[in-house]
Length: 277
Image (cartoon, rainbow, N blue to C red; front, side, top):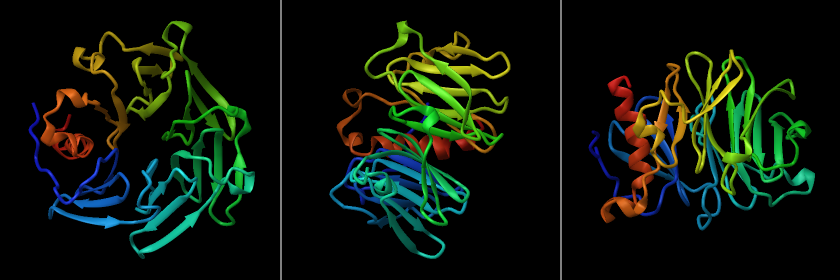
């Protein structure tokens, strides 16, 4: 029942990642990175990496700095408070300088990095990078730090919870639900400390932490969520889980196609938050 609030014609490229900035802003990324001031309807452009390359991962840390990774394995940081820009090739020390970083999770004085070959932790003080061998050398697609300090790791067919570099919880898809695209794309934690995650063509999954029980597309979810195609989930600061749908391009009016991701995420981050849903 939502209407489109605004379109930003100054952004002339497909956008695929968005992160909130306080209550009145968004970081969004395509080939470049943009900061949208929703209060004043302004757009600032930031060129951190190769302007011809698509941003792969985007993250905002507790200090408000934005992190972005590019296909060449580069990891860029922009500290808005000081306008300081830094660049690293964090996997170079392991002989994987050009390996694509698929997800970044800032965590205090270090970053968790998910790549095509596994999970790593980068220490800011000396750029030391550690391979987290316990998760194996399979691709990592999503990461979440829960309120108890555990790190949830999304891979193909499975979701892991790490604490002190040990696997404390593990949830795997059964053979029936495994497919070529069955990878964990997003993870969220609700106010009950239960975990929600999504897998491409399978749907929404719910982990009852007390019972250690995994449900796929639970029957008590609203029907439109269970049939929404390829949803994403995200936690907000109030302990609510936000569901984001991925509309099919073919079902969208041509004028909207270019700004589809920006509009969808802006509505979820701004409009839905205001309704209290």
